[in-house]
Structures are given as C-alpha cells and as structure tokens.
Image 1 (tube, one colour):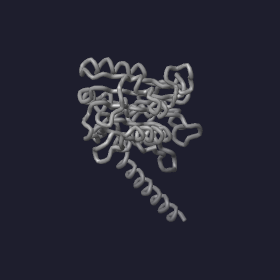
Image 2 (cartoon, rainbow, N blue to C red; image 1 turned 90 degrees about the vertical axis):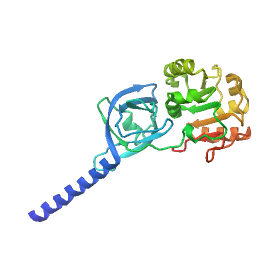
Image 3 (cartoon, rainbow, N blue to C red; image 1 turned 180 degrees about the vertical axis):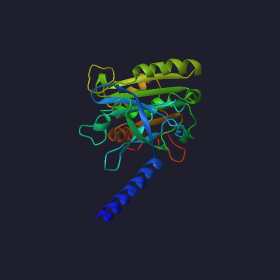
Image 4 (cartoon, rainbow, N blue to C red; image 1 turned 135 degrees about the vertical axis):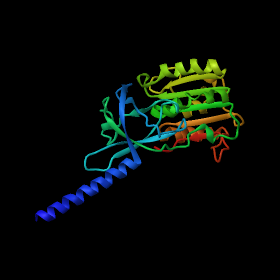
Length: 276
C-alpha cells in the first residue's frame, strides 16, 4: 500500500507540473498596481505589462483568475492603455453573481492575474482602406469606451483624421467614467495635430440631460450629427462601435439605413467588436 500511495502521489505531482507548465506557456502572471471605483457597477484596474505583450490600439486581452483545483476563469477585456504605455489598464463592469467579475471586483493592489500572452481583435484603424481617413466616429456604451481610449492615445490617429467624434452613452451621470482623461487627451493631441475633436456624453436615464436617447435613436433622428455639426457620410466616415450587443445590433442597423456599410476586407464604414 505504501508503494502504491507513493506512486499515486508522484503521478499527481507530475500532472500538477504539466498543468502548471501549460499554464505558464499560455499566460504570464501580472501584478495589480491600482484599482479605481467609478461607481457601484464600474471599476478599472492597472497591472504590470510584460515586455513580450505588444498590441495595437483597439485590441483586447484575455485575463484570467486562478481558482484552486480548477481551470482558470478567463474573460476578454479591451485595453484602455496606449500601446506605448508601460502598464496595462482595463475597464470592467460588475455582473451580480458573475463567476469572473464577482471575483475581479474584490481586487486589491498586489494581487496577481493571468494575462494571455497574445492580444486579439480587429477593432483597429488598420482595417480601414476605403474610404480614406477623414471623419472618425467612436460610439460606445459602458465599458465599450475602453478600446477608444486606447485609440485616442495614438498620435497617428490625430494626424490621419480631420474630425474625431467620441459619443459615450451611459445610464446615469455617475457612470460617466474617464471624462477628465478624455478632456486631457483632447487638449494634448488636438492642439498639436490640428484635428477637431468632440466628446458627446449621452445619459439615457436622465430626461433632463441634453442627449438622453439611445445611440441608434440619436442616429435615426439626426440629433447625434446635429450635436457634432458633422454628417455621417458614406464617402468620408469611419464608424466604430463597442458596447453591449443590443446597442451594436441596433446602431449597425441605423447606420445601414443611412447607407453606410460594414467594413469587409478593408472597404466600408462600420467596424464592430464581437468578443462579447
């Protein structure tokens, strides 16, 4: 019995080592450096960035939490940070009783997270070939703001586009995150590049707010373009969508009704992120 038990322990140890090696091959372990609470349901966190992790503005990473005796729980998160930043920042919603975010919501500085070694996603400006860059519309709900913050930290974007509009829709004014950072980006890059920039916040549950309809409605009734004083034009506009799936579907349909087309093989106006 003693021999059998020893062999069983050795086999178990070998298996643990194999699983650990496989985990290390796919992920790096990174340290949480900062956690910021925007509201009861929104928070962001910053973690170390390994030298090997290179990404294009607009892409997302897969982040994991280790669970004892189980496979890690992994979810996709768009990167908030500039591709040139030394750290990685992410923006998250709290899903009540969610297997991942309920754990993520209790993050503390010094905690470890898994980071898959390669980035993913095609919500990048490199996908646009036709029409040529002129007007860029970034339409976001909730944490869908994240990839656009990364894109706006790339100076090439400000050099390539004449007009940039960021429309950010939330339910309540308390959920309007990163407003100070957005205004700071505008001051820094717009002055240097000469590109015009407009930040258009939308608060859907406050009827007294200037814009309080959903994004697809604001496109259908023309209010979004009126506010921006800029038309959405098949010949000049690039439109990127990121947020909840219903917003993406409805907004995409509203844009198509205006004659804009999905971007396929570099041609077309509309690009969306589908990792939800």
